[in-house]
Length: 190
Image (cartoon, rainbow, N blue to C red; front, top):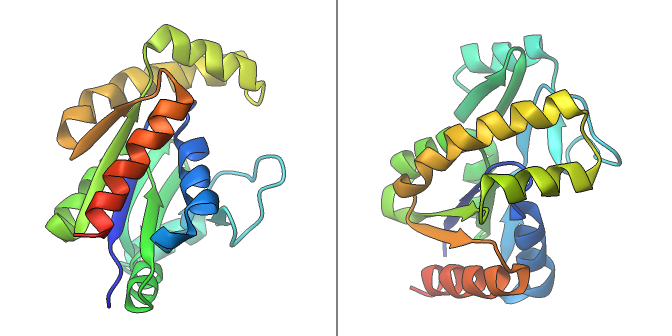
């Protein structure tokens, strides 16, 4: 049986990665597998090429765009690209994996538009922009000017929430995990 597609988008610092990782490690019955995206940014912390992302130079990324190899891509900041390779998704769904996308809002909308009802789109929303800033500062992985950029971006991204199939507000992480599990389980078992 061909796998299904679950799209997650959220502003940076919302808890999306925590929720996705919990689903994937604690709920093996869902047969979830990451769609590993490409990015032209540098690895953070212990990130490894081919695990969290495929890390490309901006030039390599542009060559793949020119070859129409992406399902979706976005230049989030100058020379900072993110995108999903068509071949990666096709191979995984053919193997029966339920493919999880961790993408920005435009990418999420593009994938949903491409796959329609074969994909579920979930937007993880922070309780407020102020709480989001607090979380980003507590994470201590970005300089203050990068946090300011992320907050500005988050305010823009929050405007896309209405375009997603489901919205989960992460004001309580355990409740957000449980809510997301119910939504994803229902979709996969349809």
